Image (cartoon, rainbow, N blue to C red; front, side):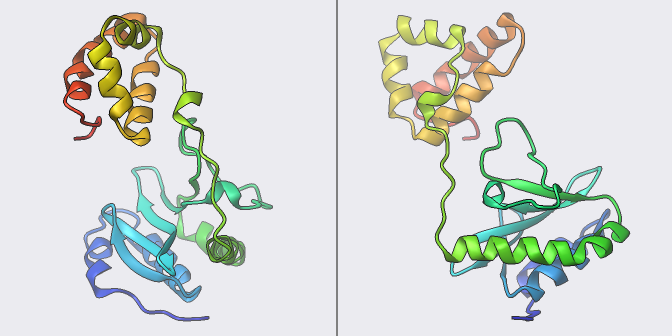
Length: 197
């Protein structure tokens, strides 16, 4: 493939980078050399093939990373993929804290990128947990049982919005915090909105 065609609309992302700029530019060259198309999605460089998103480049304080959107389907023969959080289902990262790590891993990274491209070309899908497989906190279940309007409003939400609330309500360790979250977000649910709306 060997195509390096950066999208000028994405240049500003790399130009504004205060940290990890060299590393992210090296990742950009590598990803584009594998023949992927560059766009800006979710505020970060996103690389796709045939409209299927394959990988993102993003930076955090401690590292920059390649984020494979269907990373759970990769073989990960080198054992370098990281699950960002325990609730992340499909995505997996490869994190970098230096340019030397990227240079040392370049052949491996190319292999992972080509495997991810093949997964997308084959149309493989990640089986995501259904909403019913997520834990419902006792505090939220009690409110659903007591309030039929809340139950109906929650069931009317999209599965993604439902999962967002279920994760948000069940993550605190203390019952008091879980209860406070449920109380705070009940009006949002009743108005048909997700957590970030």
